[in-house]
Image (cartoon, rainbow, N blue to C red; front, side, top):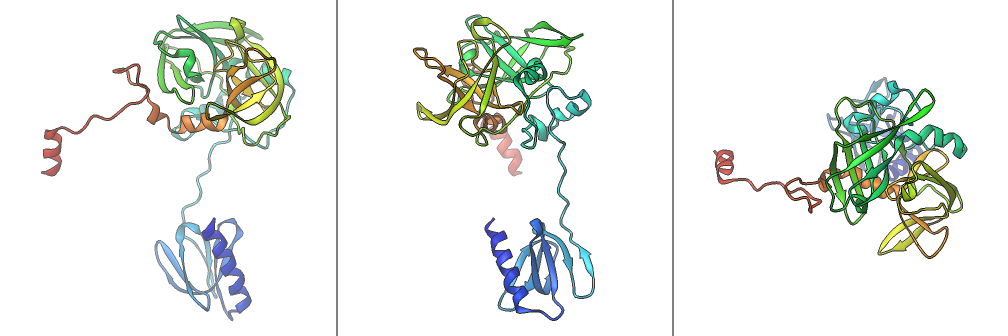
Length: 335
């Protein structure tokens, strides 16, 4: 950003100086620098703007126009990413979910708000129930390959997990229980866990987009889907009370949507159908005082999931460490 501002300022000064047959270096975001090109190298362009010479990275250049002709820059074109998809879109669009760059899908801010009834019908298949021998909670799929988010405290101390999914068939929802569930990553301090269903011959799962809690405004309507007290697919609606409620040193979303035991790990949605939080606790002696982990924390956890990888060799440890190199390996590397 600082480089952009400097280049913009330089472009304005150079334009005022008035070059008789100035060369123009066009930059990204519609910026440009006018002057005399002293050198056009593979990685940089050096431009004399009258009072100094600017060294411009080629990665910031989109086009170079000399006093006589225009030539395309050697900067690589920006890769076009696939458009985000929602749980209700066709499987052809969903097929991009498993690519390395799209482990999960970010929300589309230009979407159209819908009513809760329509969104529940659209998103219901992506919300699941997570069971262990000692606990019950909720969760939601983030891609079609069976990866899902829930709370750490839902599966804490357990390795025997099952996930109940509600598949839509002929206009009806059919419950199916999956018992081959792997713990992929966990962060006790953020109260988040990433799981994966590994049952054989599973269909592709419907999933949801992860939106931005920062983009929410206090007073906006939100709703939760989960299994409070085991009552699966329960929908509660409310408003966002605050985005910055501090609890135990962390910031949480506070909502009037009813949150109860069993909702833990479930999604809190905005009216675009995007997950803006993961519900994880409530104040038991009050009403309408539910809390959710902001989606920005969830996205950070997913982006750095390798750092929180679960180790089968040490189930109580949420982090995986690399083995130190042995003497033989060091000797071989130095030869």
